[in-house]
Length: 89
Image 1 (cartoon, one colour):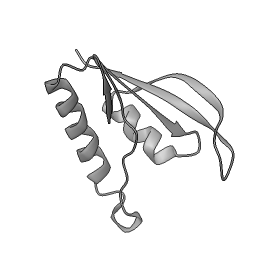
Image 2 (cartoon, one colour):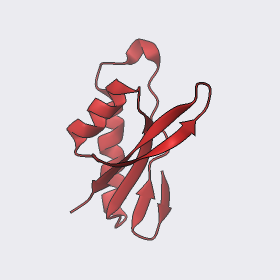
Image 3 (cartoon, one colour):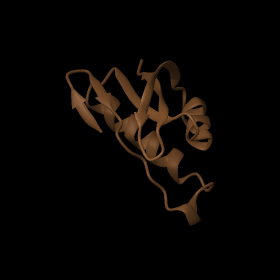
């Protein structure tokens, strides 16, 4: 996670393929949100591939909301990115 004033950008959450679906990604995400909150962060943003449905479901379940897209953001293969935001109260 990169921090700038009261905003954070979550750059990567990765779980080994054989361990996916066990809640590890959500645990990492919740821990990152807790850490950001403790540092005074008010907003977290991130990008995810539009085809990454498991990640998008996880972010939605955690309270992130879609705020836009970035055309052709990813390469190999070329794909749009969903821009998501989480506001910390």
